[in-house]
Length: 64
Image (cartoon, rainbow, N blue to C red; front, side, top):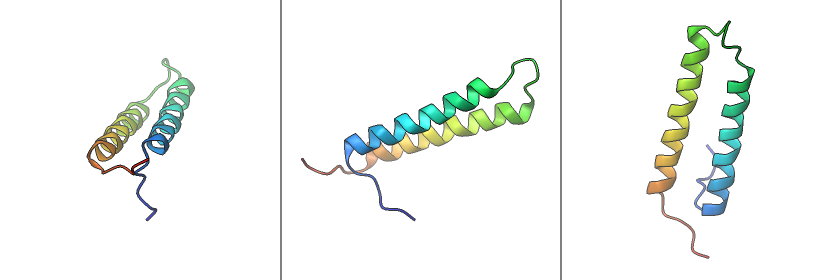
């Protein structure tokens, strides 16, 4: 496993990157042909983002 991100700025960068990945996946899905698996994947991504946000909120941060 990697080292925990405790720097707030790095946490924000990480979340922005993950949100951008989510948006790319969302943009790639065609509404007319989307299947249940596509929706499940989006829900899983949102759940992962939420979980990571909760981790960041509860994690002690590095002092500047």
